[in-house]
Image (cartoon, rainbow, N blue to C red; front, side):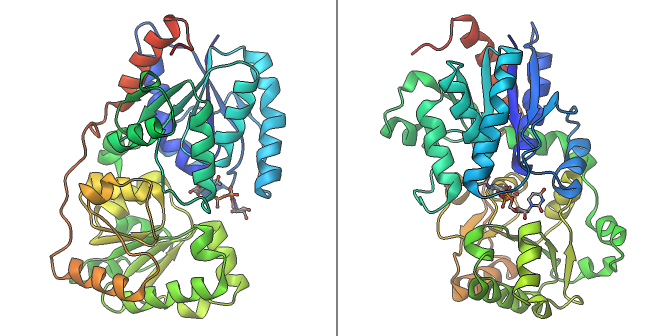
Length: 377
Ligand code: UD1
């Protein structure tokens, strides 16, 4: 049967696009079916990215939408099970750490279908993060685990996963970045498209790009207020472009914090397409974020990144890349910004196997593995 490839939320799309192309390009081709759980559904969170990333329309959309973690996970499970009966897949391939990843993994293993996890083994060691639970549980039951950095393989082996199940292949998210880089949309065009004066980006120090959506940063009024206050302070030295996740936008309204944003210094945009984000990031002086993906993308682009989290599951971006953890400490954010603006920001280098060919390696290994009679030890 085919490989069922599962996507659900925005950060899955850029990982799956190169995988689908590599499965099709493999000789012989590996047949694949694309299932979208519908976890993300807004045009800005979904439709635009499919176009930008040249993703085919899903063969099946489960249309689960939003809900509590329990409801969302349960709905995906209920609706995904018939897809396995229908397609009789050789394996289910999941990426990343969103609720859809874990939900489809559970359904597959319980039906005796092997699970392949791309971006396995990343650990923040912070179990208050919903994604950490999704990562740990998915990896425990996955049959084939592809990693983006060597530390991930070490984490997995410490958790008792046999080394033979793990393959260090590199980073499919960077495959997408490298293949789309020439099409990236210049930041000034993106601002113009939203009726914002593009000269904002022509400040002597350049500009910064901001994204925030982690519950730990945006769900609590005092925390969100503190973060927006620091950003306002930063924007006095460096104009900012803030691409707002729907969760963050809703909370800014709900907690009545919109007055903390000075539109003359901070361009607030709806969620952006892939090519828009890529263009904005590539041209930025720095990125301030709590996203997992942006930590890696800035490292690949060589753009300094300040991560507003206490920990990261992607340590190579700190050790080798351009990423610095600043947590929620206002002083650390201030000094991080000052360092970058004075030209002393991290330069970093591109990590091993973040070379644009990770998906190709996955397809080659998967073909071998499936034909060796998966799951094997
Ligand atoms: C999810 C992932 C997170 C990832 C993020 C990227 C989990 C646990 N979290 O978080 O790891 O970094 O996606 O964006 O899976 N909403 C919309 N439209 C949409 C999608 C969401 O308005 O298309 C709003 C809804 O109010 C929803 C809220 O955002 O309740 C949260 O969406 P959800 O899918 O639960 O998690 P994210 O915060 O997006």
